[in-house]
Image (cartoon, rainbow, N blue to C red):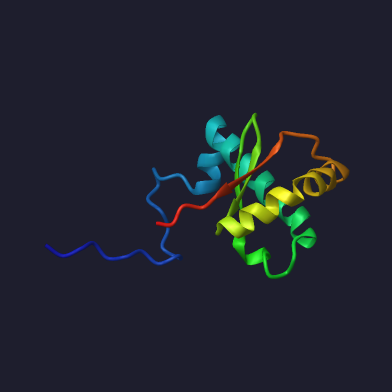
Length: 111
């Protein structure tokens, strides 16, 4: 059996299908998730200038929840350096207007 043809970006969705923006706007849990993802990326953008240039590609924005925000490190060496920098990173986030939650560092698992 042949696979269905791939739809191009210009092909309209069936009338009963919601676009991603409409789905996010119509669902409070999805809207909260989208806000948290955006805030996580915004926080990373705020601290990236503080990171050594060689480390920047090794750090990703992780999840944010009521207990903390995670920075994801690609190696244990990067994670160790981030942990050393936590006080400065948290102080910078406070200056930028983010007073909480706490910053965590997690190691990305090798998949």
